Image (cartoon, rainbow, N blue to C red; front, side):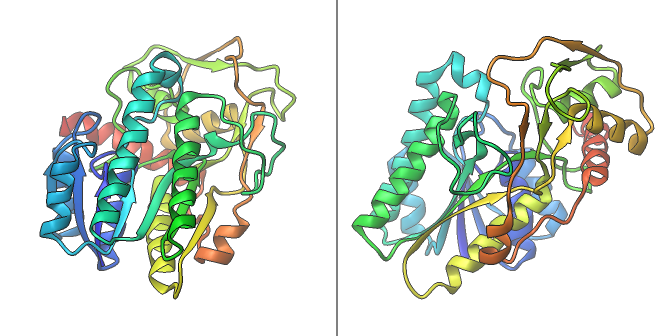
Length: 337
């Protein structure tokens, strides 16, 4: 299949492009490079030995997007386009509503105009209610706590409405839990434009000496060791989930909207991840326990059973690989910069 990957130069996008290319698909990436780098596309080509057609453009530019559809016979679209930081969305809500919602609307309008009705959408576990009890299923109540999460849920509803109006649409909505790690080559990984807010990138920065201390937000939760528990998933497992979603849609004989969690089904505490990293990577990480962050849940992990049934997908890589590959990317990225 020829697949248009919107936002394909970013963290999850690049890893998914690798998996798509290695599975025999053709890939066209459209990305504004607002939160990514053109070098990432070359590195995807270096890893796979295959060509990626790249167009630098804002997905909200309908004229440019329509030109891409007109020049290519697109079979499916994967939508990663949008801003992605929960905390940043609280401070800049209008930026998130403008960018994320309008990227989705622009894509859908161009798809309708060009009779392309197959999409995989990059959603998030941030759509679920903060009070939800784990394990989180796809039927768990949705009540996003951030503008970021609300944009994801609104786009999900857009897709359902489009599909109700035209029942020939085939859509998979993937709700990710906590993506971490990097490609084992160390050529691509998670890039932070400033100080990272996510746990594992912060751990690797502290281990590398780029940051003095890891702040552990809260050690008084009702959990095994008092620190918050989350479901972390290796980005390569996540990328493989998109390939499985494309294969599912390709095999469908009629339209359908399918919503699926992508997670491991296992919860790791902050201190468990820290200790695993120190053991696997042989680096000490100084940390300091500080007050909880407002809005943080004590425990959140997925029930990934539906992904196994519908997509024939389950996670394969554990926390050892997540830590090892994240550290390898941290070390390699110094030389790649």
